[in-house]
Amino acid sequence: VSGQTVLITGGAGFIGSHLADALVEHNDVIVLDNLSTGKRENVPDGATFVEGDVRDADVVADVSDGVDLIFHKAAVVSVERSIDEPAFSHEVNFDGTLTLLEAARRVDARVVFASSAAIYGDPDTLPITESDPVDPQSPYGIDKCAADQYLRAYHDLYGLETVALRYFNAYGPRQTASDYSGVISIFGEQARAGEPITVNGDGTQTRDFVHVSDVVTANLLAATTEHVGTAYNIGTGGETSIRSLAETIQATVGTDSPIVHGDPRPGDIQRSRADITTARERLGYEPSVPLETGLATLFDQ
Ligand code: UD2
Image (cartoon, rainbow, N blue to C red; front, side):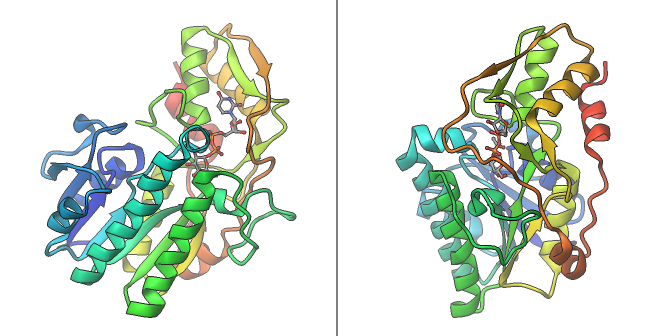
């Protein structure tokens, strides 16, 4: 991707800011972020930063003016938070996406959207392919599912170039540790502080953890692919239990933190693993960071 005017919503956040880093040298990059979880210092020099909210149609229309390509990454990313605050998460994750799609339609910009494996719920079979039934279990999953299908509809109805990337569990630098952030950043923070590593339930639940650099690569491929109007699983094809993740992080950090088990999380998905054949064949996507390497880079002392 080069020589384009690119809007990144959520561009001060975890995935969006890494994407901004990758694009800023050869493109005009505009970052829209309300800094609710994103950080101003994540936005690279050379990008235009606009503090604003994807729920604000006027701001979204303003920043979309003259844009060729939109990466829509602004979201309430926590499944748990969506269960605590369903109406708020719906406004951001669903209404915000529809507002963005309307702006994209006016300027005819391609949209690459952060969809999610959460739309599949608890699948009957693994690995999960894009044509498997959707069965979201949380407000988060329901909104991502509806938004993902709106992208396809905007392609089919209005000819907009849209691509939905169904991320599995992304991790890496700049994923902040708060109650509502991803498990790897939470476990890492606990391990480094010498506090108990808190596994929800028995820890047999699994996830397909994908490094943010591979997620960025997938976004760049989606920006130029001819195969639009569709969705792609973005994971690694691997599966790691939360208990073994806790043990690996404990060993990598070299901490005395014990691993403790609490109640299972309501709405938690039991198993998740991506079939990435479609992304491989149609996007040329190939994950390159094994989990052990990604964790070692993050946590090795
Ligand atoms: C993650 C993403 C979500 C979505 C989805 C796709 C985050 C915060 N969420 O949801 O946006 O894209 O993946 O698959 O990035 N856990 C513990 N202890 C803790 C925290 C979590 O055991 O202190 C468990 C949790 O119960 C779950 C697993 O770790 O079984 C992963 O939880 P998560 O919140 O990191 O991610 P998930 O899969 O709900």
